[in-house]
Length: 489
Image (tube, rainbow, N blue to C red; front, top):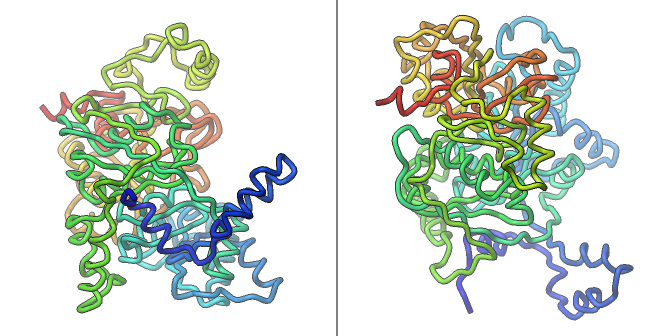
């Protein structure tokens, strides 16, 4: 019998009910033809216990209302954490919210959290921030956990060796009521990034390279475990960036095995075990990494030395090219890809063959659950220090949490940004998704450290190019995309 993967170990530890144990019944359904297909799918789902449920103002109102109508309570409010992030304004918070819908959603979460006894990091709480930043920051996120949230980028928490994935609103209600969730077991994929990264190449470039390699559908039906020397060498912030964008490759979740770097990051955080409990937890966590003889359903290997600073040119994260490359010509692509490329170029208003470094930008956004941590802000500030944002460019920096904001101010990073002409904002999702006042105007082009670049993502008609924090800062200074390696040389 072969060993188990990290994913298998977590999954197996959390199954509280499995119809799959009745193998004869499942086999009979499998032979029953189309009529039994839906029932078979149900029979293959297992009930998982959920260790941590994260909620925010957008996907929780209907779930709470469902509980209320059914006269149910939140089963484990102690394992539920709420924050406001998607809709919060990032300036002038002492003034009325300019969007009535956003204001209503924030108030409704406040009322629901109070009624159902759920901890809420509200808008003026120093711990408030993007849900996928505050979980690790506070020590709620721990190895071996199952973690869910009504947000697709829940995969971020997999950087700690936890199985974390996004769920829909009806599933949010189910977890609230039962602390369990029915799921079909995904397949496993190993993505190994070997060797070392070159100058100016960051975790954001690594995940863009992976998505470029396997495509936005490459991970469908799988949980990806990121492995190899490059992943091991990354900081925890870097690993979170990698896992954050697993969903952009179509994967259900992303994982990195916990190691001493993980434990050092966690130790002493408010909700991490203390004393003897810490020692016991470490003993368990060290058993989690994938066994040497475990078998993955699929393996992908990428050489770290081949990865370059990337810029997306199109309308999905796989449509990217080296910053010293050119906008592709649809005629050079496989026939089945040409229509998608042509549509993306029309929306992005780009001509084939255009050098990426000649593309001017209007806006720069540094932040999001992908790149809004203190390490990201330090990296961007190191590029911006002593320079000025180019004329005609509006650039903003939005910390991922109130605590990140405070730390950046204490370290002098905020002063670096403001001296360079960047706007310094309060914590929130901000321009990542255009669900708040921070949006692009139609036709505006942005260099963004966020995770998605589909049509209208940052505002109707807005054009988004995904880059690393360093590349975004460099673009803000130059007024166009520029090769970070030259800036750092």
